[in-house]
Image (spheres, rainbow, N blue to C red):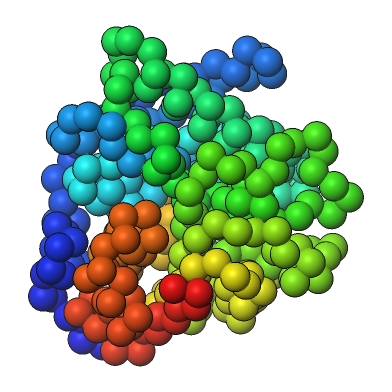
Length: 315
């Protein structure tokens, strides 16, 4: 496999396999949701660029933490984005660090209340991000462009992204205001096939651009998902800009960047390509960047390696 190492014009991001981007200021805080009495650990990355900036919320997978998805957060912050990594208590690293181990992961995956809590975390975080940006002073004062808020996530985080953008929950939305119209685009890493509803019905109301990222070896050990399952959301969504990136040889751990879970979960092999295509997609759909749009339609040949695949529709 040979990876193109040319710099993508206009991307501002080197495309080697190591991290080429510089770290932005990182703040670790706990944001308190008074309505639920819930503290949400967050990691906030602030870009050097001043003024209102686009913002990305990132949601970790089952058993992860706010430290995950570092490569994507750093790449976006280095490109001028405000980045907010969320940690979801109840489906975070605490579920496997105790005696339950892997059984704790499985139990958390089946807990409907934790699934609902993740969606509530996302809705709260968007509102709190905007509130802090509108307030005087503070790290976020005047730093967020309300028209360019995006959400991304891996695995259970991708499930969170899909539902916040409008994927139907079996049995209804449980009183949640879904889809969250404040979110302008989404990035689903290792997308989740819908359960309990046929895909066309499940995704019928999704009207937000989304990038779907998976790999030819992206199997799920909890839900039993196959690499083919990961493509189902992209195939089912119609009428809005969508892109599907399939990286040759990438497994489920390839996108997590969750070092605490072990070396396999922090392997950087696919991080550069994932971040580069994410930036292309966001520039194309949010900024109307013609060069980024053309690169996506052409299959991003300057970014991807032999065997990788990039599809688009509605663009």
